[in-house]
Structures are given as C-alpha cells and as structure tokens.
Amino acid sequence: MSKSPALKITHRTGSYEIRVGQNLLDSVAELLSSIGAFGPVGIISNAAVNDLYGRPIREALNQADYVTRTILIPEGEEYKTLASAEQVMSALIAQGMERSGTILTLGGGVVTDLGGFVASILYRGVKLVHIPTTLLSMVDAAVGGKTGVNHTSGKNLIGSFYQPDLVIMDVKTLETLQARDRISGYAEMFKMGVIRDTSYLKFLVDHMDECLAVESGDILIQAITRSCELKAEVVEVDEKEADLRRILNFGHTLGHAIESTLGYGVVRHGEAVILGMYGAGWLSNQVGDLSMEDWDKLSTMLKRIPLELPLKSLNPEAIEMATRLDKKVANSQLNFVLLHRLGDAYMQTGIPTLMIKLAVDAIRSVWEGSE
Ligand SMILES: NC(=O)c1ccc[n+]([C@@H]2O[C@H](COP(=O)([O-])OP(=O)(O)OC[C@H]3O[C@@H](n4cnc5c(N)ncnc54)[C@H](O)[C@@H]3O)[C@@H](O)[C@H]2O)c1
Image (cartoon, rainbow, N blue to C red; front, side):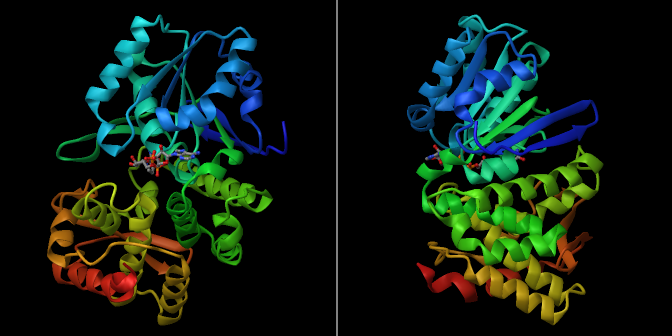
C-alpha cells in the first residue's frame, strides 16, 4: 500500500477512518478486516466504474475468502431513486446478503448516495464501506453521512443520516475521470476553503493545475485530505444539519436551482456550485457585509476556474422560482449562506426575490459567452 494518511472521523455513535492514497484498491481485503467486516460483501456500482475497478477489488476480496455479490445500477442521476434502491435490495436479498454483511459502494456520488441509503435500511442497517471514485464523491458525497435518493418533486428528498464504517479513496481511480468531473470536485474543495480556511483556499488556487491534472499526485492527496478534514470538523459539531452544517450549502441554493432549471446532466453538480458561489459572493457584497476587497478576490478566483458551460438558457425568473423549492426553505423563508469575509460563512434569511434575480444576472454577465 502506498502513502495513505488515515483521517479519523468522530461522530455521535462512534468513529471511522478515511484512507487517502494511491493503489489502495489492492489492500481492500486488509482494510475490510481491520473494521471487523467478515460477512458477504455486496458491491454496488455502475457498469462503467465496475468495468474499470470492480475486478481487482473482487479478486482481492475473493482471495481473502470474502463472498462478493455485485449489483450494478444504471448510469445517471435519474436512477438515484427509491425504485432503484428497492431493486438493489431485492437483488442483494436474493443473492444471500446477510445482516452481518457489508455494503461496499464503488462509484461517484450517485452510487455512494444510493448505496449508503440501502445500507442504512437493509436489515435495519448493515456495515458500509465507501470507495468513492470521483473527486466530488471523495470530498463531499462519501464524507459526512448523508445518504439519499431523489423524488419526482426534487433532489435528495428521501434519505437518511448513516455514517460509513470506512472510506477508501484511491486517487489513482481519478485518472480515468472526465475533465468536467475533476472541475466539479475541485469546486467542492474550493467551497471548503472559502467558508472555513483561507490558507487552504490559497493552496487550492496556487495548485489548481495539479488538482485538475490527469495524473494524480501528492498535491491532490493533500488537497483531498484537508477538504475532508474541514468538512468533518463541521459535521462533528452538527451531524444532522440543525445549524453549523448548513454553511456547507454555500453556493448550493443557486447551484441546485441552476442544475434543476437547466436539467440534470447538462451541468455537473460542482460546475453549478461554482456559479452558485459567484451568486452568493455577489449577494454577500450587495446585501451583506463582504468587503469589496474580498469580493474582488473571490470573483477573480472563481473566474479562473476553467468552465465550459451551455449557459445561454440561464433564466433569472425560473432560477429564482426554483430556489423556493429548495430544501433550505424553512418556515417559508429562503435560507442563503453568505460570507462575512473569506473563511467566515453564515446563514441569512429573507433575501429579496429581486436580489436573487440580480445575482443570476451577475452570473450570466460573466459566463454567458462561454458556450
Ligand atoms: N451525500 C452528500 O453529502 C452529497 C454531497 C454532494 C453530492 N452528492 C450527490 O452526488 C451526486 C454527484 O456525484 P458525482 O459528481 O460523483 O456524479 P456521478 O456519480 O454521476 O459520477 C459522475 C460520472 O463519473 C463516472 N465515474 C465515476 N467514477 C469514475 C472514474 N473513476 N473514472 C471515470 N468515470 C467515473 C460515473 O459513471 C458518472 O458518469 C449527486 O447525486 C449529488 O446529489 C451527495
């Protein structure tokens, strides 16, 4: 096993480790036995990721006498549904999955969200190991214990808080990722820097090329590890998103609205979050107390992230309406995460509708020509 810093994450009912490194898939059996997982292993993945990385994992597990079952879900956000979760559970039960077994998710955030949800309800909860294979799922979806599926009324409306027993992040798997998926994951690391740690933000900006390069190295390992550490600090204080955890939604109110109005699959989650961070930064300066100096810094950094987006159709009215459907609406008030300054985020309620539309105009004025 090559260099693999272990990050210990503590939560209300226990703790787990995140391993970040290169060529960790070879050691999957050793890592599973280290958490006392000895029953059957139900691997949940999709065909593309399974073709790339499923075999070495199964071979390593089978050699160590683990019984493995592989369940593949179709590609795409539209299959992150309750119906898919039920099909996965039916297949697992039919194939002899036991209460003592382990769900091992192998894939991006769609797979880790769906697989985590299945693990939380199958037999009232089985062991869960995530092997996230996109940068976004490494730094976000697989850390923090949120699982879920979509409903026709909105994204991630059904789900649970369920902490994994182990997360294995092999950065080598990122070498097959598409460029836009790298940018999407970079956006979530960038967000952690903006809301919690300006020296980390500087590190990410200084090393953007290494973070977005095909070849993964120590810089990327450091960037992922620090992002997970920052997220864990927030989640440890507020596991169930009653308060502090809500700052992790910086850029997500407008980001989700942009995603849903353009249609899922048109923009990546993190790409939409980059636009959403721009809008939230603009609002922080216009209706909050973010200084002009910090807004200049933030907007300059965001504009440097290479984005190729079909933005002609960004519609301020539709996006403003979509923000009202967001889960962050409470007591009919839209909660927006704003910045006092770089590294310091807070929740603000009651942002006027007009300002939200103007924030979308500000986004359009920067990116509209990038098609
Ligand atoms: N639970 C949470 O806290 C949380 C946080 C953020 C996002 N999410 C969820 O995560 C999902 C988005 O995750 P995502 O961006 O990883 O998308 P994704 O899971 O759709 O993966 C993106 C694409 O990359 C492919 N892929 C995965 N790994 C690959 C690899 N190593 N090489 C080549 N291709 C690979 C996938 O097949 C897919 O086509 C959304 O459903 C979102 O709601 C959840």
